[in-house]
Image 1: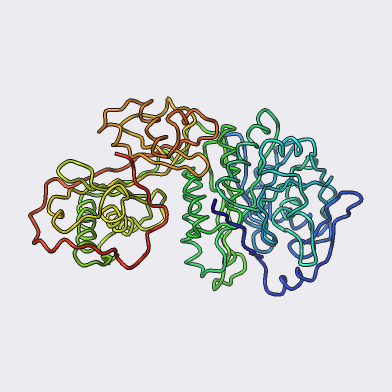
Image 2: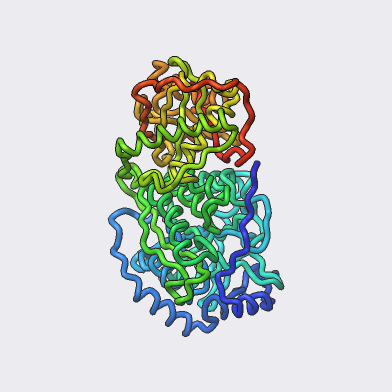
Length: 529
């Protein structure tokens, strides 16, 4: 299992970091109260000053009340002078709300541990008072999955400082909600396995109660202003389109950035099971907007997860002009020919493409005289589409483990088909799966398999057979789609292929040598025919 521990990202000036490292507040072990560790650094330590700052921040956050019920929120966790103006947009929604319980999910910045830590103490303290821990809820939650444990890990302040990501949310919550019970959670490991475990468990525990889920996360760290905006929009787009699978995989692959990505994904999984289907971006900014220094910034967002009639991502507009389709098909062919004949990776020019500069998941299918000859693709949108086509075509020809590598003598007979994927959405009811429209991705533990939308149509399968075959593709028993431990995701695709076979190419001696670079792109997979 691939593990990803949170990196240490303290969103402070060098002076504030020095202050934090010298702070030595510890918990009161006898009372079981976790004392404030970053008061006076991330936010004011004096109650009156803190209340005034919160009032000022909330007054600047103008947010219309949503029509749907608020199920979960996402808020940043930097010092208030940096991210407070953004965080206020999430908390402004709560000024006329009442919640008996708030589940706060935060990343661990100071230590890594292979589980989810639910605080074992009695309360958290801030300058605004004591917030009692809902110990009964916490104990029941920890029994739901071995990856969830009652623990002090990630909660207890040390001589190196205290975990701020959870603490900085509490004064806002106290100010807008008044009294509530807290479930403080710190994720020592952020992987799809832990995200799923927490999300599924929370949904079961929260259902039917008056509870709010809050994910604590900043976005990209220490890039220039323009670079940060580009990176952050990838994360926000996946959230807005409710594609938390792509979010999880790209964060774990280090291609996107959000230090609390695990809490975000866990909150989205739980919120979805609780009826939330719309992710509304309330505010985005970075420290360049709040402090004026645009040389090394940190990104922040405020997001509400709301009940809605349909997934916000289902209506995502996306199309590819025919001219661009033709260019991508030509690119796929040129990539294979270059790899087979010249033993190197083809280098396309970005200026030759427009729509294809967007990052998309994509598969390239090769057929020879109507029979499958190779199919590999990138499941998640981790590269610009034209680069994804280049890589998928090259590896479909040379690396598909079901076939021997393509040789030069075969090149004239190859037919190319490209499938550009839409965002992934969890299948909540298999009756929603439509043969001919949907592709499927099946995940259970470490097993994963995908079948493209055109596969069941070509094979003449009905829905049940489609589900069973996707299980087999994932290395699972055919009935595994009925297991609670199995996640089923659907997607659609823009599928286009060559209209006619090309003119024969000059033949070369059929030798083969794998391209020396780059190594195989991560996330490549091959759908079962």
